[in-house]
Length: 353
Length: 121
Image (cartoon, rainbow over all chains, first blue to last red):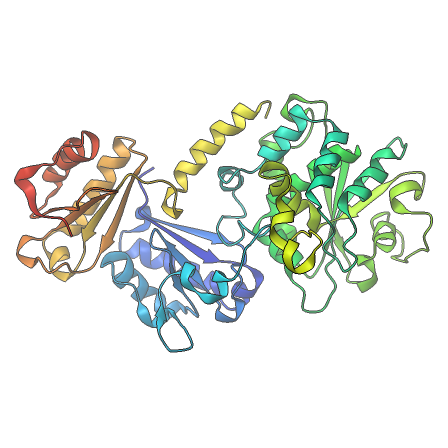
C-alpha cells in the first residue's frame, strides 16, 4: 500500500446522504481515477458531523479544511485546485456573520462551543472500520473491565461517575444496573433502545450511524456488570443506515473475537441480535418494546412488575441506550468524568452526547 | 481477542493509518504545486517522496502540498518543516534528489546543503 497524503472525510450521515453525499463520493472516485491520484487520497465515509443544513459537508486532512454544500460539479474543482495545486477552494467554505471565510472545521463557531462526549468520534472516524475505533482507544475499557474488575466494581465506578440516563427522567444508571445485577434469574437480557420516536430528535441515530462500536462496547460492559449474556438492538425501521452499520459492527466484532465466547480470555460470553421496530411510537417505552421483541403486540403494561426485577417469565431485562455510549469514556479515562462537564449549570452530573 | 496487549498492537497499527488526521508528526514535507511547479515536475517529486517514505516505513513524516511559492526559477520547490527548527527549502528538485534528501535529511537529520535555496521563514 502506498502512502496517502490526504484524508478526505465525507459526511455520510442520513442528512448528508439525502443531500447527495454518495453522488459526490462517486464523482470523486471517478475524477481521482482519471487524474491518476487514486492511490494518494483516502476517501472515508463518516457518520454525522453535525451541521446538516450545510450538507453535503466534508473535511480534508491534514489541513482540516471544511467544505459545505458541495455538488458533484464542484468535485472537479476541488481535485484540480486543492488536491493537485494545493489551493483550497474558498468559495465552498463557510462564511461567518461578517462574511469572513472560515477555512478549517476547528474555527467554525458551531464547533467551537461544543464539547462532544459520546459523539467525540462521530464524523471523525469511519463507522464501518473497527480499526479506526480501536485506534482511538476503543474496546480498551471493555478489556480493562473484563480482565481486572468484578461486575460489582464496574457498577461502583459507574456510580462514582454520576452517569445518568439521557431521557427526561435522568435515572441514575448505576441503580438500574444494580437492580438487574441483584435479580436472580437463569437468563438476563440487555436491550439497546434505538426506537427514537421523539419528533426531530436524531441523537440516537447519529450515534448508531456514526460510531456503532461505541454502543456495542458500552452494551457489553453493561451486560458484564448486570450478568446478561444476550443483547438485542431494537432499532426503528426508519433508520436503515443505523441498522446496516450496527449489523456490520457486530460482524466485525465477532470476527475479531471481541464478541462471542470468552472475550479477552475471561468467562464472559455475549451474543446479540438486531430487531427492527415496525413503526409504533409506543414501542420506545420499555414494556411495549420488550413485548414487541418477544413477538407480541407492542402494548405497554403497568408497572410493577418492573422489567429490571421480575418481568415476563422471571427474566430481568435492562433497557437503556445512550448511557452506555458515555460509560466508555467514564470507565477508560476518568471515573469522575461527568462531574467535570455539567456540574456548573445543572448541579447534577449528567451524561452528554 | 484474548489479551489487552493484542488490542494494543491493533491500535498502534490502526493509529498509523490515521496519522493524517492529526496524530504526531515529526517532519512535514510541503511540495510547491503551483502551475510552474507542476510544469517543472512537482508531481513526480511528490510521488517520489511518497514512495521513498512508505518504502522506508517512516511513520512520523507527513507529505502535503501548497500553492505557488514565488520561486519559479527554482521549481520544483520543497519545504521541510520540523518543529523548533528553521524551515529548510530545497529547490530544483527531481526524484533522484528526493532519494538523497529522504536518506540524509529526513532519516539522518543532516541537511543536504547543495540543494538548499532558502532557510527560515
